[in-house]
Length: 296
Image (cartoon, rainbow, N blue to C red; front, side, top):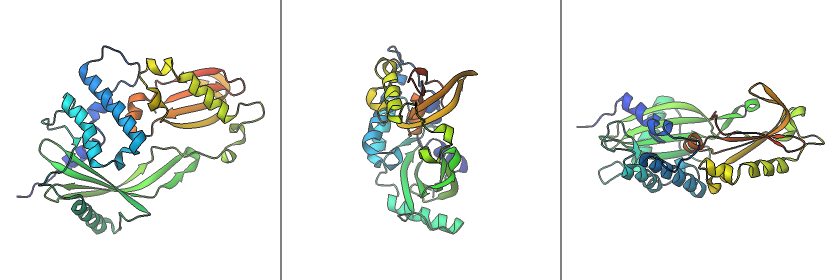
């Protein structure tokens, strides 16, 4: 008898493909204490391992299945994820009885073509990301076919990926597909000459390089250590810079300022550590504010 995968289970798989939602929301993202409970310590080990692997392997979605399964073993072996819990979803490896990656991609491409009339998965315009997810009773190939990014709103630093998603049950081959326009995690960097005049460096302002150097120094060492953010992981954060002609914080005007933001482009690492924003006086380089509390 073929196993069927319900829409509810499909939604569960999709929402938890990165990490179970209850795990993401329990991450502290602030000051790290030495007397941390064991499960939080296990999650922290997962976070640090994930961050360092991201540096070495690139985006999580492109890792080999073995690397993802090995990462999730940290959570499983510690008891942070209970594989017998019906709500648990985790990255694993297909076994001899499971459908092959190639067959899953073929079934997904055919289903997307039948429903949407779109041929997906062929470079250079398309890429495919494959995950193998398990629950206590099911296994699924979670496949995302991504079209080359298209700028949708340049003024707001937003661009979108056209994404078709297929969940192929293993080993039955039952498939569910849908289309999803997905906002990119990575902001576009707008060239200086395309920004408003008052948002560009002017005579008397620090250079971008000087502002970045001051901002990095302001959060290095003790500041990072107190928040449990290792230097090597912080060094891998993305950086964006800008000039705010009239920066204000909590209704307090801070004047013309350099705004330097550091953040991970991985949503789980970002959820854990938040971003770091450093506000500097645009001329003197005085550090006016360091924010690591909000997570937008």
